[in-house]
Amino acid sequence: MHRYPFTNSLWRQHDRTLQYPRLESSVSCDIVVIGAGIAGLVTAYELQNRGKQVVLLEAMEVGRGTTGHTTAKCSVQHGAIYSKLMQTFNEEMARLYYEFNDEALDYLRRQVETGFDIDYEVKDSYLYTIDSSSQLASEIEAYQKIGLNGGDATNEVNAVFPFPVQQAAVIRDQAQIHPVKYLNELARRFVEAGGKLYEKTRATEISQSPRPIVTTSTGRRVQADQVVVATHYPFNDIRGLYFSKFEVERSYIVACETNGPVPDGMYLSVDSPSRSFRTFNDGDRSYVLVGGEGHLSGHVTETRTRYDRLEQFANEAFRAKKSSFRWSSQDLITLDHLPYVGQMFSREPDIFVATGFAKWGMTNGIASGLLLADLLTGHENRFTELLDPLRSKFKPADVGQFLKTNIDTATQFVKGTLEKPGSLDDLQLDEGGVVHVDGKKVGAYRDLDNNCHLVSTRCTHMGCGVNWNNAERSWDCPCHGSRFDTQGNVLEGPATKPLHYEKKADVSKE
Image (cartoon, rainbow, N blue to C red; front, side, top):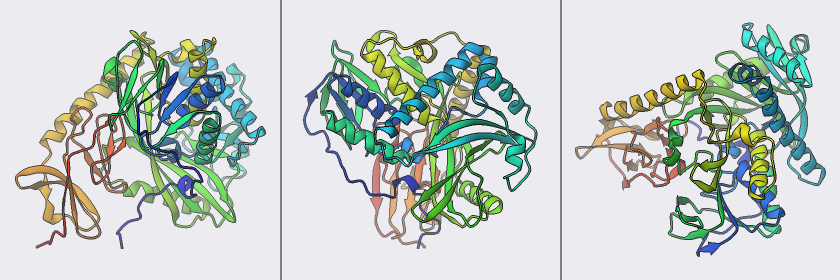
């Protein structure tokens, strides 16, 4: 028996009826979209329906990426974002960001009306504070200025909560869905419309030629008029210095069967540590999904306690059972907290990107797909300037965040070179760590059969030292968020190449 549950997403428990082939030969098309998450699939689906011939490449399988590891709240309530945008920019920019995401909600509602079976439920969305956060008071004022359908909900929340709150805010008529069912529905309809979807096909390079060429890890090529990079973290981030423009945060989710009542709606605290929760009904089982415990990716080795604290909250607040599912998600936060959607590089007008959705990929991802579809079919879109990846006028807060992010990256790089390795003999079953083997520093994981899996400790993206993640059983890069499994295979980019790997079978411990 393993010492601690392996992580598994609630959303990925249902077998898919459709699987898609690998790309086995080079092809040509109008547009190639890289990444079959929510942004990539909406982009591909829309473009195919608008008369383009689209090829969609997915490094793993549909639903295995970030979208399949979310809480799937579809809401324009993105924490205390509107007061923040008003302070950083102005009221008009805050209103545009709201409308950008609200159009995604309208799009989703229309899809449900046309037969998308995605466990869609209309829910109100709430922010709350236990400690009387001034941040929430400012956010409620922003709601009034923008004209959102909501406002103060302190009395409403206190009437149903198992603990008292100092203040709460609500936005009415938002939604929650089953994210993997949504991706599968988009994928099926995209292929039925004539699109080509290839799974287990990792893009590794985009050439700079008159017609861009995308090369995969197996040497296959896709030539197209335009390329869309929708891989969560753009794998081609070196050009344009995108690696210097993100803060990468990992957060955690548990799904627990409930014994008692859970307030109806979707909730997020603005306190620290933050807590997020919503419900999900799967047949005759009811779950509460609790999220939080975020930290910079790769900076924490002892991640199991993060799940334990969320499970404790679920039990104390809602008398929930021990978690049936637990998983984590990775989020990219841009310097000014607005996504990058549009032309990726100033001198390459045929390469586009969608990234930096922070923790709000459901609506941001859908809206980004609609924006890219307009850009690639010559239609005007009023959100183009708001999300332009080439926006260059830094606010003072952006400069501070830029310095903080890149100083931290340099610190992590140096820290990885100085860290003292342990001993392979010290590793217990189902345990990993950085150790010395034959005079070399390597990453090692001892599995349940007492085999040791050894990998290089240098991330293949930019050479930072990877750290062991004991809940996910993965090697995580603290610089830019790349993740690798125990055999060195890429789990998350921007890295595209695996870590060097070897196996020592049946290692006996002295």
